[in-house]
Length: 283
Length: 267
Image 1 (cartoon, rainbow over the protein chains, first blue to last red):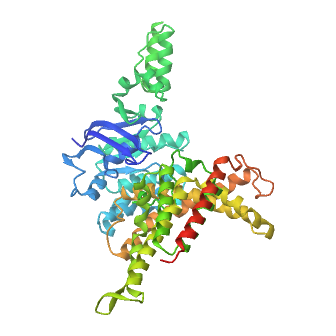
Image 2: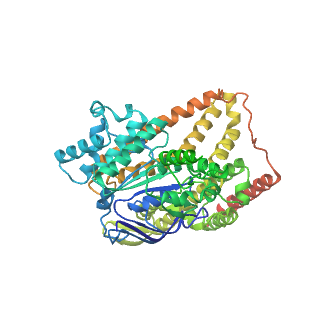
């Protein structure tokens, strides 16, 4: 059992007129090795939720456990927690500061008290893992493209060898090709290393193809939690929240309504293709 | 930790004080501050205090919120009071070693303390009840006559409103960058002074880059909308005095006359 949230509430600006509940009674279990997508509209509390998981925000009430230890304990080692639950924020510009990419990735491991040599070794492995070409290693991170900056930012967290990797909107502001590359990279990382990955996004298309479990947040509450198929079957409710199921779901629904015998619960393009071909053969 | 700074902040709520014309509030604040320096006895401060209390009640801002900003000047307040207490010559009331407390010293220290607290409360009440935009609009209008002697009033107020507008943006940005670096185990809170200053580099570099980028974007956006300074520029919401503003001016006048007449009576 990796991360456990028990009736967590969080209220912003608690004792002013602007008080605003961001999380309401959130209880979640996040076992080791899962690939999870957290989906929600802007302001649904998803960013607040993930910041609880590595102790950047303390809950107003409720408990959070990591490996059966309460992380809100006064003497719990927060630094250690943040190395084990890596969080990559949305904008790489918020964390890149060094003169070259390699030094920037070394920042995390060095903060953990590793020697220069060990930190460099970790940085090298991490940069290789995110697939950054060697020629960019010693370039200023500010000269890179959006997709490459994001890779360096992910490497910066990966270099701390986390057991859980949380990514906040890793595809925001990228073109379709860059998006696919980053998502491909993340899913390969999951396959190779087996670490728990939590992908935060507002786009169903992003996560549908990759994750094994989807958590839908709406107005601070967990509304749905389950396998993609199961969650997308509530596509009418998802629409009411301002979210949408993947286009594949709509396509299959319309085929069904037009009288074709297809399985409407498919979520990926490949499954849909097979399903349509099967229906076509039957005709 | 950044959340504790309330000095110069705006508190969004509905109240008679929020509705007043910003010019009235600026003039009132100045009148109040000047009145504090004219007062010579405690009865005068009592009147000033009452006036302030009424204003606070009218503003609908929680008292707790106003005094939270006071923490920032607490040290200054104590320092002022201690210096006045020990360094004023006069009739000695109490002495030990080389220090002596005089009757005049006690009086002066108390007055200074009250004056400072009133000063900060009064001026923060203005910023708490007026949006930065309104404040600079009011200032521009009030300073309007200075245009005749070629003071760039519009430019100054534009610069001020941009600067004020950027404070919350940069604060939020600082918070985000801090969190991003803390997620990489950066430490901003412990270590020696030199180490702490060094540890700020991962915070300051992204912050400066983002500030420059934002400034650039803003300049571009202003130019795209043909901004060319204040000449002939009209306002969407021009400031026009209402009946309540004249009533407020009258109240201020009454207060000033009262404080100056009573507060300057010899004790």
